[in-house]
Every structure is written in structure tokens, then in C-alpha cells.
Length: 433
Image (cartoon, rainbow, N blue to C red; front, side, top):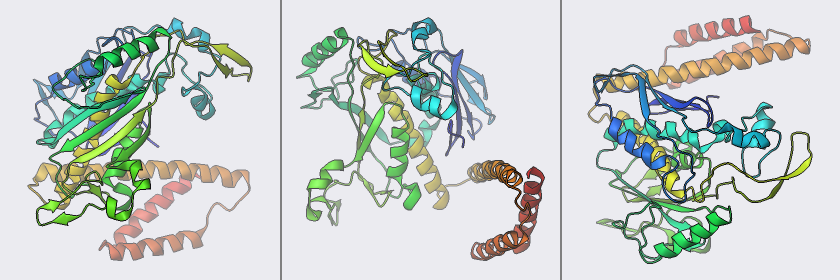
């Protein structure tokens, strides 16, 4: 599984660790001749970077983006674009005392359970620093989202909630309530002094969304948005529209009724059946407190010994302001994919480049599937040899081919083509076994 890749509208493969040499992303399937949005990417990365604001980590990184390939004279060439940001202020020595123990709230234990090794220096790949790649990549889809407006802001930080949203009120916390902003900064200062951290809830309002985005069952728009948002390390829950309030309401209180002017309400949050309704899309997600805190905690070592420790490295008192550009980036990627696919199936203003991009993505998906099949085939061969089982099973192969031929009829595909492809796949599989 390519868990570090996002292969949707554009193919993205992210790389790098918190205390490695650099963080970066390779972006494929970008049209040639597009003006490369370097300034937009710089602004978004500046909003995400550490050392920005009173309650952010004191790690000082310029997060200067380097374009290594795929751009010439300010425009995309159609070749893979490689973007990289150097790690300039990593202090790995601050984490030496953690190399043999598992930090509470971090991915140390789970990574070690899976890979039998983990990078204790700032969390390695599990660090929030990996989100640089997401933010940089999302800059390439802005043109697809023309006219769509995304507002994203906290409605709760720690114990404090917004009471009156005013988007003209700007500050380092992206807190849009003038009335209790002073109380919030005092609260966060106290939390910082005690070496602790807090989380919060972020709200997203998206306007000018066209109806019809998203697909039934496994490719629902809300399902894809949920995966994208929850893939961000600190996010632990999400809701759309009225969300968890639906549990206490009755059907007549939750249904979005309609008249000849459209929807009367929008309690579903702009999505029904996984497909956008044309109403504003609304969602909220919860962000947990930064797990690195300067407070004595209990944990265990790799040798299962109980110990107490403090996180002595730099950390955010509140990660909310820095997670906002990351969430916005993921939302942009999901919406760009949905819009691009809808454009394809509705035959709306398509040109040869659009068709070629679509088929290139399908070809890539086929290659990924073949690669995974080859790996599984190797494992099957090894299992059969270890257990003295029959390598070849012609009856099973013939039944599978008959089933594929039946499906070929439904999809109007030449049966002889299916037979040729199947024979090649089986031949390659036997070589691996």
C-alpha cells in the first residue's frame, strides 16, 4: 500500500522526517504550461510553519520552498514536480533521552509495533512537519477550485468557545471573536507556563459548491473529506452539518425540506447520499492537545520497564493555528478531485489533455494493482512451498477466467483481450511462485 501517496486528481508522493535533511513532495499529472503558484505556496507554508506566534513551537524554520524539477520559466513542463523544504533548526539532541521509551500520546509505540523501529527525533514521519508536503501540493489545484470559497477557523480552543464570529478580526490564533480574545490569550499563557497544551474544534464553511460532486457508496464526498481531514495527525473526530446533534433530534427536525426556491434548511451540511446538494458545505473537526508537554508522565521503555519522563523539546501550546492551512490543503485536494471527475463524466468542456490525464491515471492505477498482485503472488508461492502445497491449480484459474469473461460482457470488453491479459498475469505469477 502506498500510504505516503495521494493518487487522485494529481499524483502526490510525500517524503521526509521531522529531523531528517528535508521534507518534500513529488507531484505528477500536472498539466503543462500552467503558471506555477510559487507565491501562494509560500504564503500557505508561512501560515503552517513553527515559530509563528506566541503559542507555537519555538523551532525556527524558514520553510523556504525549493523547486527541483517540473517548472521552467515560471510554468509547469508536464514533468514530475519535486518540491523540497530543508530542515534547518532540528535539534536531535533534545530527544536523546527518549530513544528507548515510548512517549504517551505519540506514535512511538504504534510505529515500533508495526515496523520494529521508529525515529524518536521529533516523531520522524509521524511528526506534524510532514504536512509541509500537503500544503505545498495543494497550491497546484487552486485553478480547479475557481469561485469556491473556503473559510476555516476555530470555534473552540481548550475551554473557551466563540460567541460572535467576526471574520474581519484577524490575529495569530485565527480567533474571530473580539469579545473573549483577551481571555483566550490569558488562558493560553497560563497553559504555556505550566508546560501543558490544549486542543480545540475547527469549523469549515465552503460556499459556491456545485451540486453533484461526490459518488455513491465508497467515494462519497463526505467520506473522502473525512479521510483527508482525519489523516492529519492531531485530528480525532469529524462531523458534517448538525453532526452529533442528530442523535437527539427527530426525523422531521433533521430533514432538509425543499420548496421551489431550493432547500429551506441545510442541516445535512450540504451533502446528501455522499453527493453535494449545492448548499454551503459545513463540517467541524476536533484537534487533540499537542502530546509533547513539559509535565511528568508515566510510560514504558522498549524493554517494558516503567519510567517517568518529561518532553524537554520544543512544542506548541496550541496547534490549532498551524493545522488550519493543512486542513484547507486537504479539502482543496479532495474538492479538486471531485470536480475533475465530475467534469469527466458529464463531458463538460473536455479537451484532449483532459482525456489523456484521465486515462493516464487509470493506467497508473492498473500498474499499482499489478504491483500489489505480484507481491501477494510471491507470498502465496512462499506459503505453498513452506507447506508442500500444489503450486498450480488449473481448475481455480479456469473458473476465475470464466468469471472475468462474464464481467467483460457486461462492460462490453472483447473477451479475447481479457484472455490474453489473464494468461500474461498467470504466467508472471508462476514465475514469482
